[in-house]
Length: 417
Image (tube, rainbow, N blue to C red):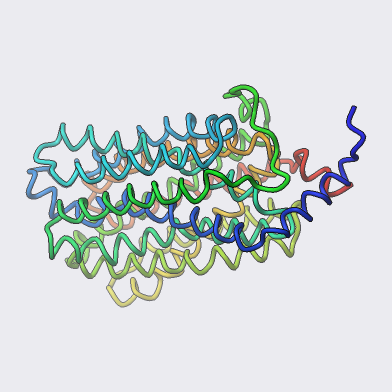
């Protein structure tokens, strides 16, 4: 039996972490940039879908087929990436994610038919999904509980920044280089950064980080009732978030006759609101403490459902400009709370696996919702019904979260001792 008490081990770990404050923020920056690139790559199609679909001869109702292809691969790689982050180390998993993602993204720019594009989008998803658990594992390893909320808030703000970059940059790149050329630029940037990130992280070990898992344990989430509830709640919430991210541009174009640049500027506001709100929420999490995260999450899910339902009732572009940032706030601000709850309930050593598997379940919503919203809008041509369909997701998420019991993982228990 070890002679070192859990409290002493935790104190030593916190002391070691303070010895390298500069590099842990470098780890956060690397992780944040990696997430930004993966989200920009995955959302680029939403900004060029109408124009690219016309050139490829794809009807509006089928524009979501590439999104479905991406997320089919994405779900699978989240599971594999989560297990591998605990077993092999997050820096290796990040390399194996970003470099292939960049290559597949670059090649997608040459798409000339649906089967070729479908296959490449699936390869993009298979590459991109592993990065999520790798970056969360890095943050959990390098940041103690006292600062992890703000670190997680900053990390998850990259999702929203990816929305901003995709909507602000990709349409303009498409004007200059064509939509295929925009994918070439994104692909090169992603692979290059993946290589740089690996060389920066490969010889670094987080002070006090747990040993790598001795085995793969794919049933971690499903043996824990609370993690299972959070997995399903996240699925419902992501239904709303990514349904908006992937369909709002096309819906606004069809409903209000807006150009791709105009809808892109609105959706950049959508992403910018999340970019600001998630770091703020991270600081709030550090202030309110772990047990209150559940109540915060229920309120945020409920606000998201109400805002989505109200968004479908808007009738002109001026109203869209006013309400879109509010929608963006609710669409993203819950993410650091949800990820933090999963990692804390799972415990540090199992974080990669738990985050990877729960995110795989969450992203199934991203596979299903583009098809469902496409069918709803094609059948009804109703902007209102499309957003009511999206609002159902976070409403169910709020109800499911009410049944979660906050059961602290091993690391939280040591800190509370």
